[in-house]
Length: 594
Image (cartoon, rainbow, N blue to C red; front, side, top):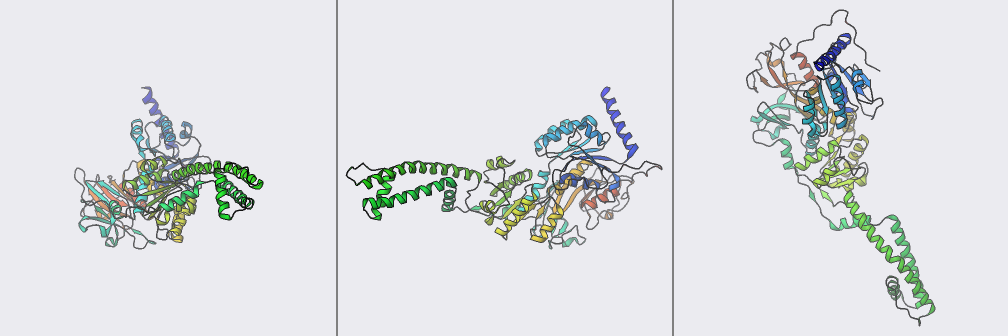
């Protein structure tokens, strides 16, 4: 009985903390990168919903990067701590909290933090960020009420679809149907579910437009046709390697000798040339005979001849001495050249010219996933990373993907990967500066190049698109944050559809008795530009994908919608009853820590 009593004591302590300070649902987020920032933003939703819950963000004492990490978001409590242990979680008010999100990039560190959090609050909704999703089953066994998510797995399909020239990678199954995103021109009218966006003007993309027939990006049902991304992969020209043996040999020759050996060879040849001229003067022969005698004497020596003039005998001895130095030097050049050539080939500095391939810059979490998925589509690739032991380097070697080791922000590195003749450049390293330089150099080498650029700062990405005409930029954190926030709120996001810089969420929302939508017609759900109803499900019945908009909504119904973040937040307010008013004289909630 000791354990249940202790648990109840902790739960009571948490509720006392809430009653003394704030009665709203409380969520604790631990992270120090843009994912934490976007998860907090997704939790707070619009300004109208921010007052409905309380968020505590745990961040290190000092910023670890220049990107946003959430600590400057108004209306949240910030706890600064360099270690996620029981003391830190108690300071953050984890006892009695509704959920905890562990968003650091260290799988083992997140596991350790989860175990510490369990000591503070055993009955906790836990959301863990992990790259190695194979650990998910083990985490769920230890923490039954948990979700293990990988932002890399969520965002990588968007980069792959952009590299293939498709609008979105999403294909998912719900209520007995497989749905996918495609261009209206690629979809049969009978397979159309709804319009999603108008993208005819890249500068002004309209999502969920009121004039649905104008949408050129649609959601369709798969009825035997492959999803859009697979069609793109089939239409995409298979990468072809232009084999030019002479060019490869010349590149190898350039990398054979080091600078010191080259200087030594040139100096020795100069000495031999001078000695050859002196030998011709001493022996009294012409230049052709002098060249022959000099080479033979230097490389193999001659039989001694005492009848030769003294000057010729002296030159023979000197040339033999020069030959003793030349032969080991030639051996050193050959050995050094073979070693350097093998290292260059291994490091990717010597690459046969290619065309139609895809270049992936950065083999971290995202780059590794992108490379694996592009390989699954049968596309030829070249990878670039400055670290030969990067996370995805081993996978690249296993898949036979050439790896160029170097700075992607340098033109010579991109030329080594044949960026001038590739069909897509996917730049997904963790350095915005390197990413931007690589994208601009790649576009300069190939004006028609399709560039998929990863930038952490969304505002910066939009300005780059307008200024340099780089039309495709993605934020991993922005794409993945809605799923993390939904998991923390114990709501399932069925799919996230990226369209340009927008993210549409497909989710199923239950209608609670006493809510604003209870008793209203289905037509009240759809709001142009914000929310579109896909299906309506009555308890015990199958989903109705073509429900009458005049049908009255009842408590217990489930609404499958595609919505923007703000629209989903508004819908959630209308499907749940309003919280009870605060009693008179209730204490004022604590202000966020500075």
